[in-house]
Amino acid sequence: MNARGVLLESFAVAVKAADPLHIAPQHLPKPPKGRTLVVGAGKAAAAMAQAVENNWPSDAQLDGLVVTRYGHRLPTHKIKVVEAGHPLPDNHGEQASHAILAMVRALTADDLLLCLFSGGGSSLLALPVDGISLQELREVTRQLLRCGASIQEINTVRKHLSAIQGGRLAAACKAPALALIVSDVTGDAATHIASGPCAPDPTTFADALAVLDRYDLDAPPAIQQMLCAGRDGIVHETPKPGSAIFAQVENRIIASAHVSLVAAAHYFQHLGITPLILGDTVTGEAREIAKSYAAFAREIHCHPNGLKAPVVLLSGGETTVTIKGNGRGGRNTEFLLSLLIELDGLEEVFALACDTDGLDGSENNAGALITPDSLARAEKLGLNAAAFLGNNDAYTFFQQLNDLVITGATYTNVNDYRAILIL
Image (cartoon, rainbow, N blue to C red):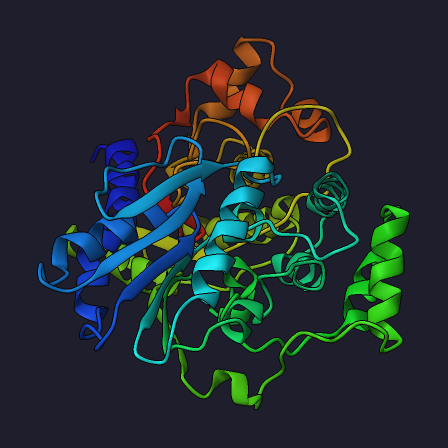
């Protein structure tokens, strides 16, 4: 069996199961009496917009604007696609968000707001509240991304600094709204995907301040002041669950990590490999999660009285990395490097960890692969795996081994995909 080829093909299957071009059309509503405005943000936004255009009645009014990450544009005719900064927001995202909010405010009760949200939307839909500059928003975002905070914690802060997220887009709309969402967060809560522009926000200004305190962040003074003003009731809270604002709003998850894991499981079953889905909501430090998975793989390999090889361990979710070094890499390569060290050359164990959007962190790779001889090959090249892990430099390590997985943009995002194959 070509284990590397099987793992790569399983990743392709998982990504295809979350392809908006195939999924979105079955969720499209009927056109309204008036016009349909399409707005959106995320790494899948352009693909979703293209799917809407390709399947919308030709005689129905349709226009709009979506913002996606640089390099994720797809051709559209009626819905404008703008590329902007991710994971740190930039001026293009801010300008696009201003335009989106103005368009939404102009809708009437006879119109329809069709929103297309996916992972990455939080930074792409960047519209700071009055009193906060884009530079200040960038700085607190940078700190949050480096400290090991979960995406839910990060978005709790961002929602309370945004004029458009945390349900505020829905609050600005007089028309019925449907949000089609490709989920990249554990638990698939709409409030945390693209920071929930059309979703009720159960978190508070006090929760946002608690995140900054928990990770001892040095946020810009204007941000501290804004969050304190909200906590003290001087600034209005985000719209909450039960608010009348959401009476005509539906948030619908159309793709998720679980669906992709099930598709991959079916692929492995077809090959005679027993799949075991360990969960689609795995969180925690990538290098620590890897230690647990290595112990599980070792148990199956060395004591085959329970599960018998061939077995594949599948999981999704979003691990985190607390950055202490100055290397390159994302959470998937960090997971794999830690796994490789823990397995210590264990025979007949292969693994792949990739981000379904095709980009692991801020690098150009989706993730990487490890094989039973990866550690030996590294040692021949003079690469000390533990030193690379200590420097958060997993990208460089796997680049030297020629084991990076590079797919380019996939135009979707249901977070991480991990497969550990035990033969």
